Length: 112
View 1 (tube, rainbow, N blue to C red):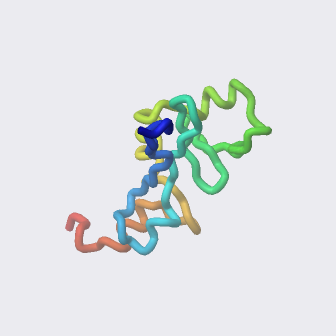
View 2 (cartoon, rainbow, N blue to C red):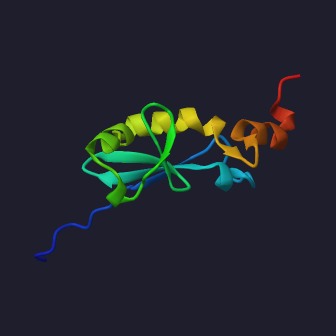
């Protein structure tokens, strides 16, 4: 019998995007939900962190945030995923939103 504990497996990151898997533009419009410990998750994109107010803020580095900042930018998993889903259609790249990119690459799925 081994004196070692069972190996643990934990999901620590989710990719959230309006664009479906396999879409050539998905990675540039993606938002990441990342585990930050103690049941807390951050919604991030390119060094910015989404706040409870729906605004993106710089400050994902440990040394530039205080307790007030953390309480506004850390969430339980369900809240983090909901905020990421709500923000996903509005991600902007080169002046185009994820919704614009979806409409351009999926014209056959658009209502007539």
